[in-house]
Every structure is written in C-alpha cells, then in structure tokens.
Image 1 (cartoon, chains in turn green, cyan):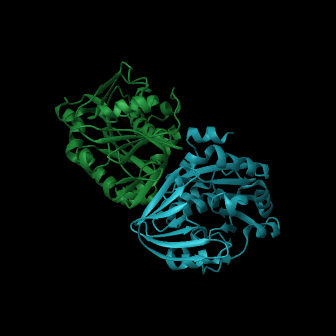
Image 2 (cartoon, each protein chain N blue to C red):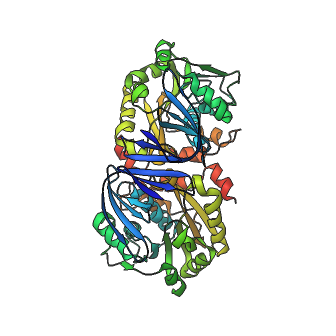
Image 3 (tube, chains in turn red, cyan):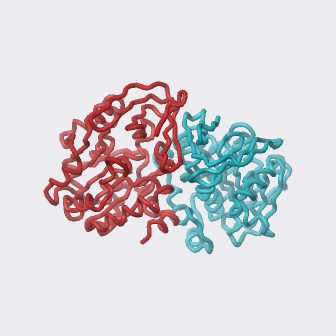
Length: 286
Length: 286
C-alpha cells in the first residue's frame, strides 16, 4: 500500500509493519501496462523514483548499492564469466555493472515489461548507458518461460533481479525455478537472487531460499547483506548459489585490481559481506 | 516532524527528505520532562518504540545493532579498557554492552534526563539488566558540564551516545567538546561518537566530525558503518578517535575469543566495517 501524504510519497510495507517515504517535488507520469502500474516521481533529495504497483523500485540516489551488489559479487565469485543472463532488471542498472567486466562476451536481459526500460532510458539514462553495447541483448518476454525453454549449460552467471516474492515474482524463489537455473548454468556457474531484508526475513524468506537452492542441486549458497535505504528496513541482501563453484570465496586479486570504478563495491566490501552477523547465521542455519 | 497517520507512527526527517514509520498497536504513555517530550509506543512488529520530541530513539527489535556497535569496536580498539564514560545513553543499552567486558572496572553513564532511564527500565528491561552491576554508576546531569569539570586522564574509553547534532546535542559534535574528551582520556584512550548516515551525511556531518576530532588533538579517526533500520536511511555509523591509539586496528584475537554472545558484532563484522565503501572514503577525505 502506498499513499501520497501531502508532498510525501509513503510506502507502507504492510507485511513487515514498516513504512518508508521520500519528499516529493512532483509526480511526473504514470502508465498502466499489461503487467503493472508504473509511476515516476521527482523527489526532493533522492532524484527520480520509480514505483511499480505502489512499491518502491529504485531511486537515482541509492540504486548504486543494489546494482553493484547484484552484479560484482556473483561475477567475481565465478572463475571466468563470459555469458550472463539477467532475469528482470528492466531498469538496466544491473546490466551496466555486468558489462563493466571486460571478460563478459554476452549479457542477455529478460524483462517482461518493456515500459520499465523505456522509463529508465528517460529518467535513469546513466543506468542505460550500456544498452547499445554490442554484447547486450535486451529481450522483453517472460523470464520463467525463457528459462524453461533454454538449452542446458548456456550461461556462466544468472542474476535474478526481481521484485518481492509475492505476486508475479513468487515463482522466482521456488526450487522448481532454481532447478531450471541449475540446468541452464554451465559447470562452475553462479546464480544470484535478490533476497530481501536481513532484519525482517533471515528466518523466513532467506532461510527458505537456501533450502530451495540446495534442493535444486546447488552445492554452495551464501547470503551477502548490504545497505539499501529505499527498501524495507534499509538493509537488503543478495544470495549466491554455486554449481560446483564455492560462492563463499571470490577472485580477490581480480576484484582488487579491477579496471572500473565502483561507489560501494570493493574487494574489502565483498570479503566483509561474506561473514554474516551471528543472528543471521543462526537464523539461516548450516 | 512526526505524525500519527491512522495506526502508523511516521517520522518525517525533514532535513533529509526521507520518512520512516512503524505500524502501531497503541500509544502507551508520554511525559514532558524539563528537557524533552518522551513518548512510548507499542508497535506491531518492532516491539516497543521510544520517541523523544517526535524523533525515533530506539525499538525493541533492532536496538542491538546500534548498542553493540557503539560499545564493542571502541572497547576492542583499546588495549585494555578499565574505565568507561558514557555521555547520553539513558536507555542503558550501551552500558549493558560495555559491562560485558570483564576487564571493565567502572562504567559511568551521564544522561541529563532521568525519565529516559525510568521508561527504559519499564519497557526495555533487557537493556537495564546491568544497571545494578556494582561497576555501573548512573548519574543524571549535564554531560558537557561533567566533561568540563572532569580531571584529566580519568577514562580509557568515552562513548558519546547522543541524539542528532541539531538542538541540545549540537555541541557534542564540535572541536571544543572533543578537546575536553581528549583531556579526560588517558593515553591510549578511545573516543566514539554516533555519526549519522553514511548515505546522507558522509560529505557533511561525518567529514566535519573527523576534522573536529583531529583539531581537538586525536591522531587517529575511523568511521564504521552499520545497519540501523529505525534511523534515517536505515544505515548508520559510529566514528572512533584515538589518543595515541590506532582505531583502525583492534584486538582481533580477543574479539574472536570473547566470552559473551552478540547478535550483530563479531571480529569479522568489526574487520569488515573498518574498510569503507569507496564513495565514503572519497567524501570523508584523507
């Protein structure tokens, strides 16, 4: 549920009992697509804000935290990623980070709703600066169907950059979907899924995610927490799963010597995020 | 500014243009003290909530993040802390964490407003479980005046567990106050101050804090970020300053072998928090 309360956009995360808001300058535009209701806002201190069905998706100011952490830990955990698949991610911010890796030869992004990308090109052009990269392929179709039809061993890294596990994205957190991911990954492959709030979801969604990923055949799983102010509790996470790849480790020298700039990610941040606070380890279990 | 919006408590952080809220079960009680207006709420998912002058102070659910990070990094940075001073901290949660360290012989807590402690004893008894420890001394008086009158070299660690640097607590972020802290610390002493949001304040409050601490004579300063959902942006920090003590290091073996449990803090969390994300290092400067 969300509401415009005077000149504030306030999102009430009903299931968690927490709310987050940003002061607005103005509402810019809205569109009802076949899939969802997308709104664009200009905020006072966070730049542009995109919401989908009333839920905060991203802001100009803090999306670097999420996009860097959805891309770089997975890519540096893999020995030599060449072929990357992004499910969701229509704002193209994850795609941009992926294409910073010189070794990547192909990055396929599958978002069901083309309008997300059209709005992103208009309001977040910095996230779309790699959309014309010849290695990028943007497809607008159903990611789950794409996965079902995909030949085995086609990708080195799969990034599931989805909305919350309620409604349309629920299936993206289940073992059945992860079995497709496991099949579509080559040996040594890495899957990463955004995995909600360490404070709010460690003993529910995050714990279940590990169970489902292992049930689907992944032999290593690892959750990495990071800050994300516009999402519930301001604290978020991604969970990596390896197919014959230890995602609790990474190419530390390559990460330290990377030839592109980042604002949040670094080899030290990656190393730090690999050790969970005690309460999370206890909640997730062995 | 804060408001009860239906059954939600919503705090609008006007200066930052962000809002945070919790769903309420009920308002419990309120009191106007000579210093401030304190309110107690029962929330739906975060336990009890204390607000002062409409600003969120702490909740049952997530205060462990703040209290552990205000106490343990400073105490493990010091070689052998015996005498600890807490300025503010009337909810007693920081005091409890300090007294978990067996080597501490004396912990003095100076909060101007006794009513904060009385409410904490009633609604957060778990935070007050060490108030009767013979090593604890709870004083209700002006912390700034106490510091001005204090003899030199009386303490090994000073923890400034204050509200934001606007209004009454503004002076606690200035060089003049830090000069008193420097004088009151023994050689090898450590000062720690809560230091606002890495996303919102790195190039303002946090940067200025380092300047002011060094101007006051501290030779090492170090900011450590940590999650704190109920504060603006959900991401918070503490800043340590050393008087002949390198606060960029700590007693790693002692932290790893500590004889008490923590929910967020660990030696690995401490180590991780010592390396800042690139955007913070750039904002704070050398």
